Image 1 (cartoon, rainbow, N blue to C red):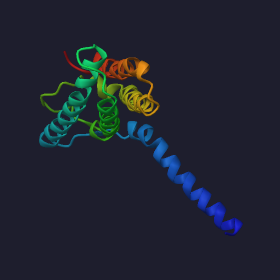
Image 2 (tube, rainbow, N blue to C red):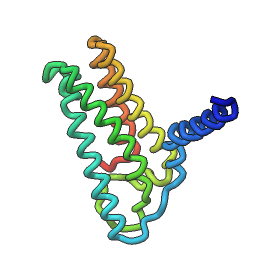
Image 3 (tube, rainbow, N blue to C red):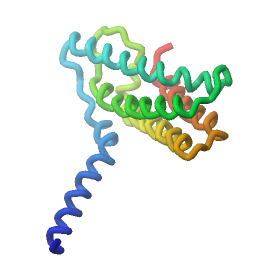
Length: 165
């Protein structure tokens, strides 16, 4: 392959990788206002569904960390992969500010006022889920409880600041 072709290929790969790596940070500044109450209600329904899926995958992990059920590396791996994927989706589903409409939501309005912080917290969740997968892949059973705790702490950090009681 000629040098110019290799340079073009490298530049294209860098552009694609840069876009992928920066995507969550870019999304943080792309918050839009809901244009109607119906649009706001739909967004809230999707968010709540997404968060229920996170909850359903976090539940067994929490039970393992508390010693209520035995540690199961396969479940930990599967559920942490799901949580990573779902958490990454939060960037899209929380890009529509619904606070201008009287919709029932568990989110505080502060989520829109501090969206960059919210985005960091979501990124922390994505990272903690990926870290937990690494522990499973490396058979670090002695660190599973700690990894689950770190993932749970990212949930708590967001709930403390952005979830209504």
